[in-house]
Image (cartoon, rainbow, N blue to C red; front, side):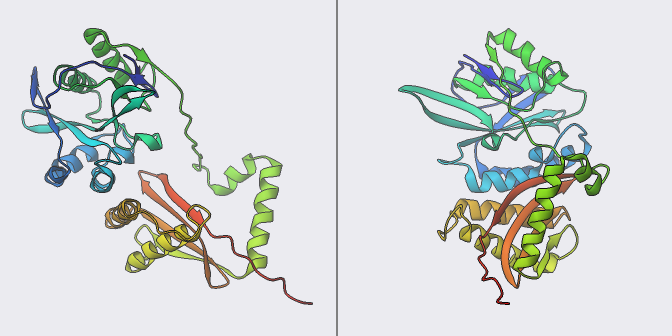
Length: 316
């Protein structure tokens, strides 16, 4: 049994039912139907508004879109943990369960709902790591699985210590691995960021800008936070079209679950004024699209795609 914590796997051998468990003043409940997630919206959003130590990956609007489109055979069976204290929601564990094989050995794995993108996290009250312990104690007594994969939990933090203590209590082994995540610091502005990069980087960037200008008149439009909301649906359709025309799909239709997720995500965050969905056109033809979410001063990349445009050189 192994378990990746900060970026690792921890295996747990447990029993099979999913139910409720009381731990001191905390009550743990597990939701296994995606249809039930909408009823959690008010409590979930209230909790996320009060938690400082989190990212957009534990937000209701992102996870509702993910579970609604991916939960099931492709994304795993939903397993959403809820911790309440006196009826008040104080913790959410957005998990899924995957059944498969490692070689010829059957393996049941619990992981965060968006783990395959190396994202996902617990949503728990700040300064209350015991809530994470409550999740693990409940899993150890109620759910059968072979390993659990977590990510983004750094060694030495209170969250890691809570997991480590629960692992020792239930005799689970812990194994860690590193998953680097690209982060760009734009706190001093984009120009400062570029100047801090290598000369070769700046030269390449300038060359690409020149190529775009030579290909035709560039224009960028779309939805940017509270701007362009009236163009939301057309921006979503352009996102689909560019993705399908890109090297990724080469004209094939984007899968329905991907369409549904990107569309739901765009609509959910556009309603909150937190969506960036920008399309670059060159000479009147759509060439590229980038979609991101903006929360608390951070931009989270969701997807990008571009089309290889071929222009004939002008005759002189």
